[in-house]
Picture 1 (cartoon, rainbow, N blue to C red):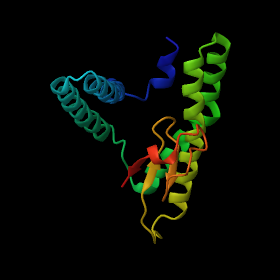
Picture 2: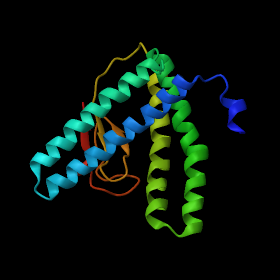
Picture 3: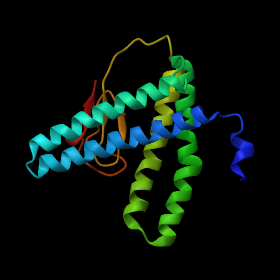
Length: 174
């Protein structure tokens, strides 16, 4: 069909790697969510199994990404991250937000809106990192909001600027 013209340059193996990477990445996140639910339901052994499988899926995903030559220099990786985040907040999420509004799907709209705002923050953080590449003088942690994903440098805010979650709930990333 219509896709063939655009995808001709991609071999079947390259397309399969891309599909497998996406599937393994999704399985990792899904199994981590399942593990959290199992912990909450007091099934620690099942939770451990889900976490172990999630880790194995990460191994598979990273192997596929390597085989796709998907990891390059830090400079190129930052440029790719900026492009990806920018695409998300300029095209992908705005369209998804509109569709969710039209369908009255409040949870989807909220989820997309949170992600859309945070992707703008990520693009700026990546841009700043790219501008300072090779000139890093300080070392600090990042803090991530557990509700919307807002990402803060050096300190958690007193409250999340996007969803108002208290800063003390933020996860510290070292």
